[in-house]
Image 1: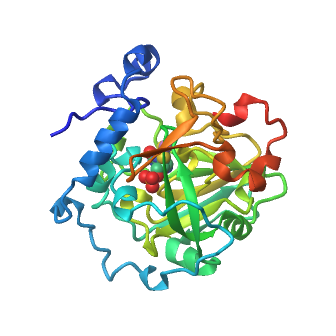
Image 2: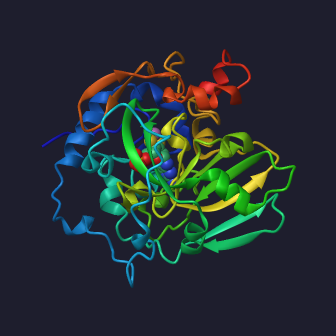
Length: 330
Ligand SMILES: Nc1nc2c(c(=O)[nH]1)N[C@H]1C(S)=C(S)[C@@H](COP(=O)(O)O)O[C@H]1N2
Ligand SMILES: [Mo]
């Protein structure tokens, strides 16, 4: 038995009105790592044979499955152990499927991920759509080991399969005026229980500058641990930007829009003072409600110090002209 508690940044459904969000923060100061720990223990205790967690089969099988595993790119490695797959696939943030860490693995399995069409629009030579399997086959596929740091102070280390976002940007052919790319998650109120919650600004959106999106580290993810992504981890297409807090890593992407205006993101629309557009990891810039100096490595119970840009400063620090400006770090 355990007591289900919300992470500090989440709110119970009953309080989930914009008014509640902005006026009841003082009631939300409890929780934090204790809640994360409880959720992890709970989710890891789930029974594998639970029918609710058995993935809905794709008719004819996952057309991309035979492409795995992708060849590992040795340039992207890490010094810490890879997180146990059981931990990283049962302890998730994917609010489309519920706000508790164990909700996505339970609630996402019936969600259909084929057919899956990805749209490219806005400031591109010509708007177009691509079937996910056509897109995957057109991309330079590889595996990378990356660290992932959530704004809630937990982290993991994962072998992602996918392709550089730079290759996707080239495929989209943005025009020279494009300065940002917005990623949009699916909207499916029938199959995503979290999207029944009407006050949140669905669909989930996130954005990057073109310089960020074409940085060598920005990675489009289609799989993990050498096979296609589990639904709870954002199948069939998600982002990994390992120098930024995890909420930038949009899951279940259906659209890339190119624009010359900085997009307003899902979390910015909800709480701009807490979850900004830039969201680069920095242990020296606390979240308004908690320190970011440390992180708990899921599946281990260990707490380790957080590092600037999550350890990826060599690749990305030059993207940010003023490293003293706290706006880049929330
Ligand atoms: N569409 C969508 N993408 C999302 C989220 C979400 O709720 N919806 N949560 C984000 C957050 S806060 C984190 S930490 C990561 C979690 O990825 P994981 O469950 O694979 O660890 O997904 C990110 N992408
Ligand atoms: Mo997160």
